[in-house]
Image: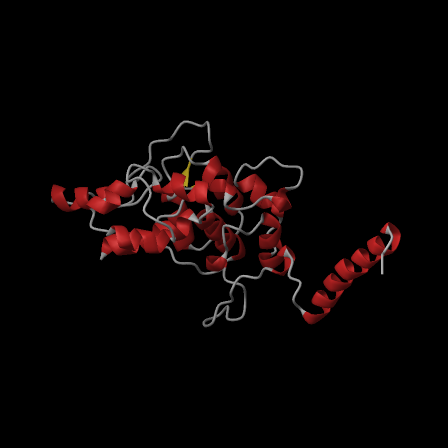
Length: 244
């Protein structure tokens, strides 16, 4: 049987949109709005979404849906100029702030959301926020620990001169250990060659990035941006190997 163009178009329309409707009804059709971070499993906030599970692939809109932090507030905090801030993908921060000495990325959004909503988050890692973000948090009834952390983990907005900031820790009496702790810390300018020199094997690097070892002279952050990887996640995993 030969089908003319009109019946054929009608069949395609029914199959395509009928499939979407069926998938939606079965719970198979998942849109971005359905993304949901994992919840706290213990403590005072059990059952609430945990900002530590915010992913680089999330948009400001997903964060707003999960945590109630308005997309406009997030855009203001991280100096994102957009007529539709809810569509901005968090992983884009790594590229925008790529030239910055301190990383501003997914971890920064996790920190901002946690402080904004008064939720607990691990503060053992050095995560930084731009001045705009820190200013927005000043009226959020931060506790003493959060306020102290902000004072030593706030950096100038892009284009502003860096203020003189006291070191976060007292300098060691022994020069050698202090030098080691600084040199062996992954930053935005760290290359794969450096972490090879620090004892991480090529096989482990390939396991973390899920691909063959790139040129050792490649900056880890640049590689993650190019390949669409979450730099904060890659950084944390590799840093754990270095710390071993």
